[in-house]
Image (cartoon, rainbow, N blue to C red; front, side, top):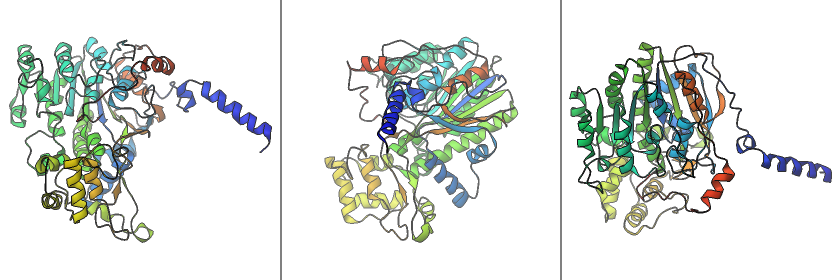
Length: 502
């Protein structure tokens, strides 16, 4: 290569570095696709932490083991869909609050806060604007109802982990429906300040329900449903371990008629939030069942849209997590599909297994738990590794890339050992953390069949929602440089509690 060519390349790289970050990354112009029509109702269904690898495994499992086609597959085949970039203001790897802010506020923010900039400037979440315009509001999630993704659509708070305060903000906000987990943020016996938020919500006319039976019986028009101390248990544990919580579909069934009764229309966010958590744990069978549960809820939502053509459904992932892929096995990869069959006997999450095993299990107890709940026969050294991970925090393969422990060690213990023919599911995870890959965006509604989406920035979801309801406003933007200057004073960023999966 000639010297002048090297210089030309250097000048081009320097010019690229001076471009705004979105242009430097090749992000599409924000003069992107538009809907071309208005809707009365808006539903945003967030598959949290959902990657295309998760889709591929669920798609194949549904076809091979259940003899059916996913609702999501049918929609992807026929309706507008594309990809979104997920990076946040100062990081190529986002977390759920910054991703939620991009959707609900239309601007990039620093990881860690809800609808707020790093300098404390509050932003107006989209559902707050919709409420001001007369729309009923609902939040339905399998996480704590005060978690980052639902919270980012309705309130502003500098700390996504301040869930006791966020619960109070929900009371002040006054959405019609809140359904999810998080009893210890509402219960006076568990809150640090002793406030009884259940009583406070009831005093404002909410029906307060705590079990699936109470949810089914309630005829309250406004509803607070909190079904677990922390996050709602995983679908695999609800289905096979008999844990008494409603499914995501059942919660959506409770929300829709209450919201649809409002003359001015409604906005609803549904979150399949524990897909993300299962991927953090590297728990492939648990991820699968939460994706399948999301698909059941998706069937219900598309049926509602079919009956109510003035409704737009946006299905979107906020980021990928772990990226557990079904990889090739055997000669010419001919044995690869067996890994799907080996997911069939999995009947509990790592979360449930760890709860059963306690803090000081014996190797024999570990082996029995894996046999009964994962369908895997551990060898003695593998069981001992799990014991050490639980008792001594001696993590494997390491505690950095696979830092969600001891669960990531449990995942390592049941990794495929036979290269020629899978003896265990041939699904491998790159890490226990979020990743930077683009993720799914899908639209379902009347008049959209020929819309092309392509590759968009995640902030474009805000524009699509605004166009759908005729709500046009703009939140203030912050530059990456401004944010980095502010972050110099707090270089550690947001410190998540140990049990928080971001």
